Amino acid sequence: MNKNDIIIKIKRDHINRYDTHPAIIAIAPGRINIIGEHTDYNDGFAMPVAINKYVFAAISKNTTNSINAYSDEINDSLFTSLDELISYKGWHKYILGAVNEIFKKYNIKNGLNISIFSNLPIGKGMSSSAAIEIATVNAILKLFKIDESDKNKIRICQKIDHKYIGIKSGILDHSASQLSKINNVLKIDFNREVFSYVKMKPMKASWILIDSKVKRELVNTHYNQRVKECEKGLSLLSNLYKKEISFRGISDKDLLAIKDVEPILFKRLKHVLDENNRVHEMEKFIISSNLEKIGKILVDSHYSLRDLYEVSCPELDYLVSLSSKFKYWYGGRIMGGGFGGNSINLIKQGKEEEYYNYIIKNYKRKFNIDVDTYKVNFSKGVEIIDNISAD
Ligand code: GLA
Image 1 (cartoon, rainbow, N blue to C red):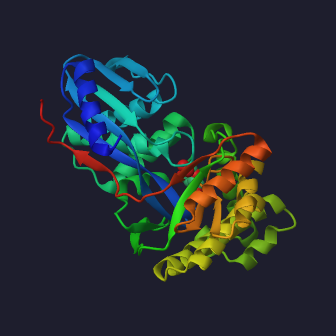
Image 2: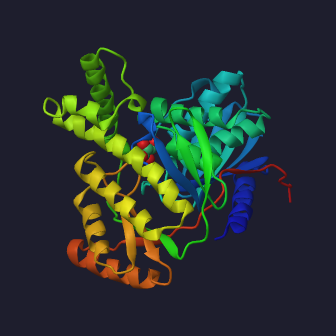
């Protein structure tokens, strides 16, 4: 279904379910991350971009004292009283987190009907969680005519992750979903919270995602542990150098002080420093459309995520090593939080089908699993539709 068909469907379903048409539909895209992994909560840099897979949140007010929501994809509903906003399970937490945070901040009390629709695969490293947060937060704010800055919207979403979901995420995913512009890659400086755009010229290559089918649940993985390890590494350095040390103030040489005493922490910090350098390099090579160099950076990032940050898994390592034997593969790596999900790959234009067949056949042979493949198309950030007619 294309975007317009989904809008028609979501509107019709909303009317059938709640007996009123939605006042607002917010459409939030998922994202890929070209480079800059695990740098967002480490004051670093990254280059994500929104893709043409979305979460749709349709919303209307109701006169009862309840929050009603329905997810088409999960085929599950939520019904809870405003006086007792309890997070029950999975996706409910995103909705109630958004309602709670916005209602508290703006002292709102009003019943809501919400319909969620998504064509963005869940748990695959394409940021379905951030997209549901961005869609719901934008929809609620628009419904109550609250003019919140993009940065504050992103912050509200991050708070939902921290407080309701339990993941100490950075703002990479939310920023891409909120702020992307068509034909541009975002470059984010997380330390200064500066968002700039790098124009992506048409390249004779395609961005391809391969879903390893290894399901990644960030809450149950070592994501939060990595966050803590980086904090610990920095505080160790601060003690050693007797001054506050941040990622912006250290060099490779400074890191050597903990190499022998805390080899694991050393590796985590080293990844972050190297990955930040890769982001700057990537910017140059995207501007000059240097496919070989872009590919090389992706592969270096994979090795760093595998060996230094240790967030890869055998299936993703295999996908990268298998791909490296494919003649028209410029490079690729594990994408997102890690521990499974997708690899992102840059393939010579016209060779996509050949690549799919090669990967599907060999991955099946090795793991007896059928991979999914996606050709990525870039998208703009969140879109809000507010002129919805009753017919
Ligand atoms: C997940 C998190 C992001 C970011 C990435 C790793 O997607 O939600 O905030 O940390 O992992 O780069």
